[in-house]
Length: 324
Image 1 (cartoon, rainbow, N blue to C red):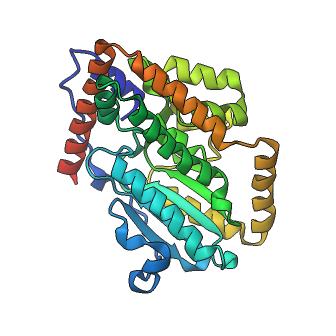
Image 2 (cartoon, rainbow, N blue to C red):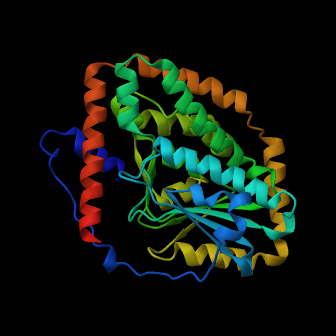
Image 3 (cartoon, rainbow, N blue to C red):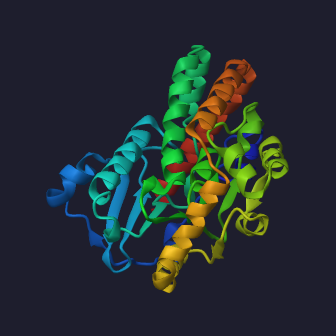
């Protein structure tokens, strides 16, 4: 769902509108990968517990590919967060003592047209109505711990690649920005729509955008609620590659193959970047508390707008499933 669709959802005249998508009309790229041997590796990797993540190993490129398969709307529900925490722990457990076996980590989504719509708005509204500030803080801290580990490449000698084959909004865009390389398909949209219902993205957006391209641009993005194209985000310096629809996976594979001999140097650049612009967990936690305090000040009108967006997300999910 683009921010434009968010704006439409807030309009009473458009609240019932839905767009029908036809995934079969898009080109499909098949990636030959070696599935993780769950029986052999489950104790180290814990993948048998992952219900909303698809994981496979690309042996020629020493790459671990992960794709989100969320239950319901494509957002970070609590179970999805648990799966990502488990994935991170499992990767470290399996590869910390075998650093040469893993060179790349790729993160994408199997939801047609969407990378992620971000945080669980239905949960936010429920916690806010109950004045459960602690619950909001705990959710936010769970998110920023995931983001912080990815920002530091899990403390492994790897390069991380975020793959947006669809829209990345709010927390979905925040999570992408924690990766070293961002590849976006041309029709994907990006932005922070939280301003539309009186909030701001509180789980890494300011920290990451400001470090990459400056505080002024970060504030403009967050305060405007504007939607941006993949090309605009590339021109701004937030996305590295823009490719045609359906070509994202192949572009990621091509990047890995082209840079086989340069892996150490490229990895060193990203490590140096983290030294120059360090990001502490304490900073992220403090911003989460600011975000939770802002939630406590939302009005009933704000919460109704938030719920309208949840309904629009549900309709979008229904039309996509019907088209498959």
